[in-house]
Length: 164
Image 1: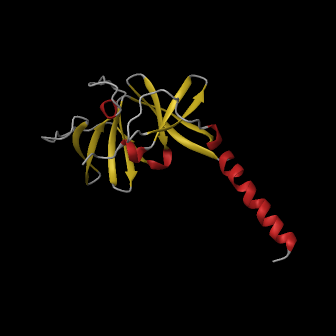
Image 2: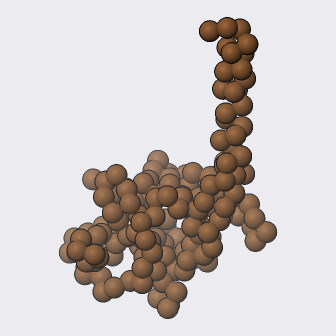
Image 3: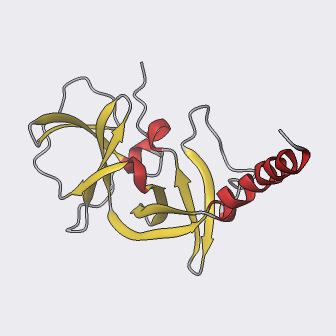
């Protein structure tokens, strides 16, 4: 490899992280107990109106039950309880289930309302604020600032991880 080619490869490698940081990412926003959250749109399989949820005896307090969706049985988690926000989130006509396509299989999360699709460069992500209570499996991976304040960005896999 000649020196000019080696130099151009090295320069391109050095630029790649900046290009990745500038590439737009997309998140879907939603509300839980009056607070704004978002998850990577690539982790979302679909968003549906909640069908009847069948309770599962002995399930954890944040597991609402199971539903039948497109020939499969999915677990449904309560987003408010999962994040420790409230024991009962209001039931309104805006309630939706966000169905995640995770490695462990699909799982649904009950949210109070769906928000907008948020598109922003990866570089706009900020670390979660210091001084907040943090748990070992904290699903908050970052925050995004916008005209209305902050949006907590959640890691869907950590958010939906079932306790063993």
